[in-house]
Image 1: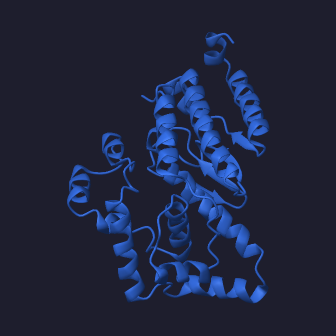
Image 2: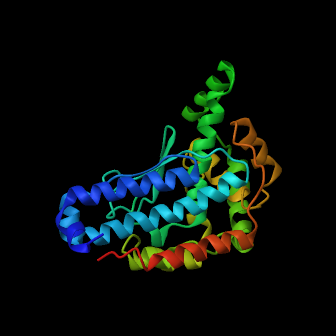
Length: 266
């Protein structure tokens, strides 16, 4: 396709993204939708660059979700949308109904853990809908009161520090976040000295985040303390089936880096 046409005709750009999404959807067996970047951003960055951002991100997500599917997990529909996740935000993705939504300009921040986290959200919601009404009510009720007691919070914090020491956060994109301006230099320096308070913060924020964070680590093979696993099961956390080996995670990170050269952002 003539690059000049892609640059000058927004409709052709949208059609190209739609066709690409359909091709990937067929390969994955689940819908991948790429929402076109707004015209204003395309005028600023160039449509070719926006095509590159969206397609390279979609290819990476396809790779990760294919492996998640091969492990025996149900996967969601996938939406890549600049409108819902602006490149100015440090948010990589979020879960919405049957969809996992991601931003096209976040490939260099996207690790397998981020994708597994959103997969955990999706599987948890699916499992809750399969529960008897009383169990569903019990889980919803716990959203409005502390979901972990003080002792459990301390145990969870130590679990996260153990996971950090065992290398489960070796691909955390702290340097990339600093370079992109998503975190301050003092935060980066503080993390290097005291990572504990940053690693566990999201898991302590709510029951839903606790479930997704637990799933993301557990599906990579990390073993939580019995007290934390008991709480995870009480909240109907998704069953941990096959897990990813460290080598498989490393290969997924390498795949992301192979695609980064296509993800041109100015």
